[in-house]
Length: 189
Ligand code: SAM
View (cartoon, protein in one colour):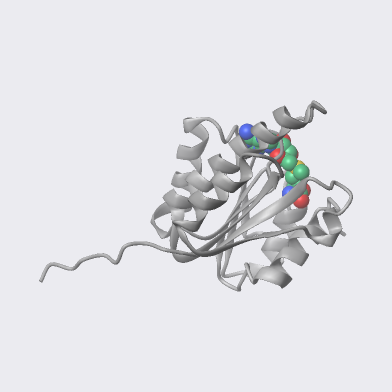
């Protein structure tokens, strides 16, 4: 079984947006307790690799293609640990299910969630190979269009989706950026 019901959200996102393929290197931000890690590990298989990061300790997984880092993604030190773990290969997919502690104050929760989503977006720009994908959770609100526009500059296309599995939390959605655009590397000629 899965450690968290949120596993089914990633399954739905993957079915609708084709995120995970065998052999992929995947980053999973806000990964505790590990439901998404379990799904991603299955999808990428033994030739793939999944790196999860969370503030909370993640109980070790059975899957041998998963490593985890405990840390705060708003801190530079954690980003550096992640980059070191990925090595030169970078990543094919960046996932973020990070969520702030809810205060119940709509605007504050929204702003904090956009801030976390922007951390994931920055990581994606650092590590994603050309053609790579980003899927990031965010609570709906006034700062969403700016985030989406910024993502649209970096991906072939961006769409917003509410997986059925998250229907109850009505303000929660996922922005999916498909196909990272990178400038072609010039060879010396
Ligand atoms: N996708 C996970 C799963 O399937 O098990 C569930 C993730 S849960 C909805 C959100 C997680 O984001 C929490 O475990 C929380 O600790 C983490 N989180 C929130 N802010 C964070 C930050 N600044 N850095 C790292 N993780 C963070």
